Image (cartoon, rainbow, N blue to C red; front, top):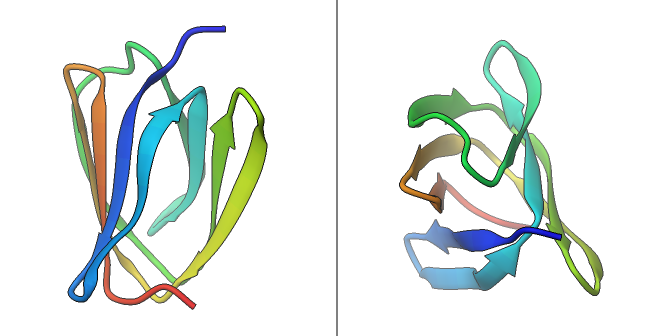
Length: 83
């Protein structure tokens, strides 16, 4: 399965960094998932669950909102806070 780099950051620091197969997140206009080779995107996020899919399983993060950027197979999610 193809992977790409992803980071989840908060004002306190990184809560996740690694290779992923996909990231599903709560967009302001509905949930969506980003996979490898996704078109460049910047989107706002609302509070909800972020599902990070890795080759070894899934990790769940509850965020209070934020934004995400995907470019050149690098995803950066900036969360206001992670519970």
